[in-house]
Image 1 (cartoon, rainbow, N blue to C red):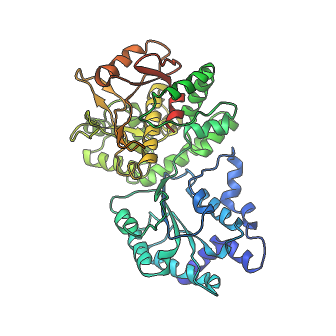
Image 2 (image 1 turned 135 degrees about the vertical axis):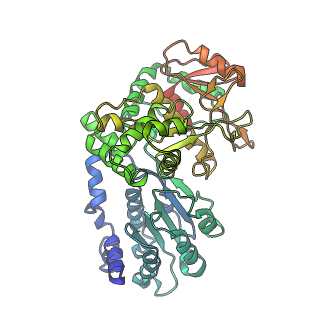
Length: 489
């Protein structure tokens, strides 16, 4: 890419530079920007807070990597951050450099860092001024971490705030070694952040503002007396939470899908095709378009049991190796999550089969939306998957980096070979390392005690997620799945 092409990308991507140079309002661009303008069509008022501290706090040498699946709104969040920075009276808008990196090669990225500083050199008239770099979709560039490492080590780029977004977390990109080993700044803020589909709390805030949102609890402290009191206060509204939960399990948490569900009564086939196109691009580019619905159907229908890779690969017509590659691509693209078997100490059992959960309920519905004859997911399997993802997100919130290393959740087995869906895992707490409470999912209105006894026989206590039963009078509590989701996240 030539310098003039990169300069055009920079000037087009930073309209506030021109406004600042002309002493005009540096926020004029917000109302006309295509991405922000298009959001209004599907806007229910939800705004992620994932970069609020970057927009609000002084510019330091911090570095943040923001990851998550495609179509979840990372580019929009980055533009929201740029808009907030442009509103600040203590900051020259020309310190903010937004760089869309789609189609870049590694040499283009290296050159763009040089040209970005050159095009904003006016802010350095008296003293060198720190910049805020908003680098969008960098992870598609092979070798990007080495470029940023060299720039952090050898140029003023190392003194700037840098936010990097990407839709993949590839083991071949040494993100921790190249970017976090002494190059992420002195800030105590989280370096790895995830923008994932709206969780159930976000969904309720956007669609059911009349329903109370209880405070989240530590996953090791779900049976505290204060939690029991909170649940008791919500007992009268269990049916309302249940109906909201079923709707959430029908549309998932991708913002556009939620808006379509609210405005049209269903997620459109058009948006399902958009998500399938993302998955085909990142997961299954070698196969025909219909491979994605079939792959998702196979995974969704097997979500409640450990995944036998050999048998599933045979059913789909893959070799073991090809199928395993697709599973890893799906997790690296934040489309799914591994759930390995754990022992009594919360450690992964080598060689045991793992469960495999899709990251959002809508992914499990794509097959039946797009392909005749595909099986619709059940509310029971969707509930288990969604609570598993909620617990994984809660663990990542407590212990940064666990998600990308596939070290969040796990399942366990009893001596009689009964399965417990979410086994205790080690997490930090204010009192030191501890274990999360075991969780079993039974989407039932009655007859829950048999499942509770499985937990009690192995662990003595725990939580059983139900459809509508709320009972905190036993060593294992029955908690409606939507209320448990709110307690987790």
